[in-house]
Image (cartoon, rainbow, N blue to C red):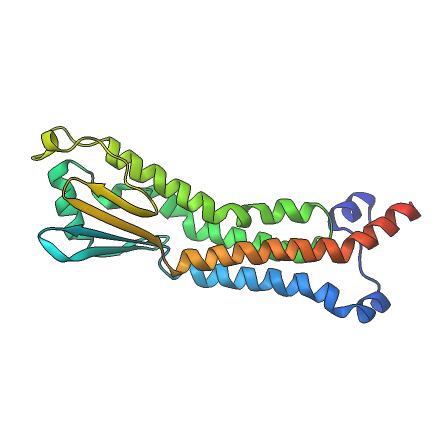
Length: 219
C-alpha cells in the first residue's frame, strides 16, 4: 500500500486486534450502515408538512412535501395563493427536486465510504450527511421567503397583503390565514441518520486513534 493511499484509508486492523476488541471496531460500522439505511428509507417518505388554516376551510388544508413532489391539498392552496399573488407551489425548488434522489444516493455512498476510511478524511466524507437536514430546511426557507416577498401586484388581493416571509417551521400568520409547518417522517429519519453518522465518527475516532498513534510512532 502506497504512503498516500495509507494516509487516506488509515490504518488496517490486525486480525488479533480485531478479535480482541471486536465491539470497538464494529460499532462505527453499524452506526454508519444504520445511517445509510435511514437515508435510503427517507427518500420515499414526506420530508415536510404544512397545514393552512383559512376561514373557508375549517378543517384546514394540508400538503406533504417529498423530495421530488408534493401531495395533498396542493390545488386548493395554490388557488388561495393566487388571490394574494403567490406563484404555484410547483414552481419552487425545481432544480433541487430534479437532483434530490441522486443527491441523497451520493450522501449514502459517502457514508458507506466512511466505513472503509479510518483517517481524518472520514469526517469530510460524512460532513454532507451531517449537514443535509439543515441544508434542506435552509433551502425550504429560502423558497418560502422568495415566494412571500415576490407577490404579483396584479393579483386580486394584492393591495391588502404586504410581502411576508412564511416560516419553514412553526406558526405563521398571513392576514386572516395561519400556517403550521413541521418536519415529516422523512426529515426526522434524515436527522436521525445525521446523529448516527456523528456517533459513528466519534466511535471510529475512538477505535482507530490508538492505531494511528502507533503508526506515527513506528514511522
